[in-house]
Image (cartoon, rainbow, N blue to C red; front, side, top):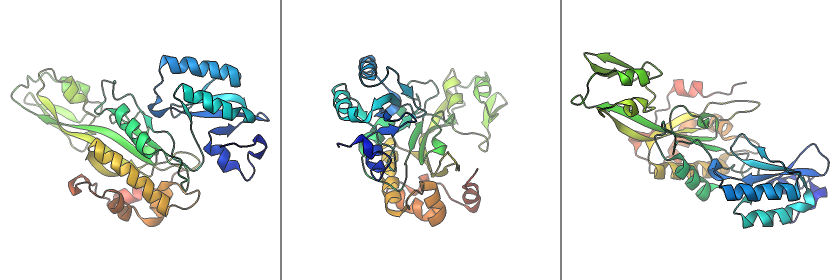
Length: 312
């Protein structure tokens, strides 16, 4: 898309944002926002980006909060050539404005605490659902491998959290108590040399099963909890949990249906959480969990609805 630099932040502001050109305080200069799914870069790509930052910018790169990269100090007229050279190293410009952002992932694939392959899941979500379609507002997706939620999924429009619920086989248990030590929330205690779990405290992080030497504790329920409607900014909302223990395939499909529902029902400049407050979360849940077994749906009661509120 050829855009005259003089058109930025005039009626063509949207077109500028969609090409990954971010206006800065420096007159005539912009930052190039790059699409870096999952935040993984090879050394070869890094070397290529360094060369392009020197050629088109001032030899600097910015690391963003969503594991992305921006190259600052680029004249608007240089963007067509920059876009072409980025393509040769396998990198594209990422849009902003009312579009889906690049999917963020924690390092659950390689982290000892990870319960799911976060890299593969986030990559598949981004591959299938991150396109140039215009939405009512920005749309963010984050994936976390465990309840520590390092990628902050609960304050994204869609958040997925890997869960692993423990189950005890008393036969191999030696009463060592390592599961008690591994639990940060005091959800496990020993009674008669056997662990007993408090379901009100357990967040299915899976640390107790990973710490068990004789493998007496095993994962009984592994999957992804689904949160929707979170946001962080001038106003905040903590996402509403609408389903649990989804398979990766179910989770990827749900993201697509949520994005489609938001495109159809959201108002201009309204985040998904605001749309849910306006139209109701229960009808939304019915629409976006089509095909997901009912036993995986989370009951949205009055207490959950009351907690799902705008914060400042």
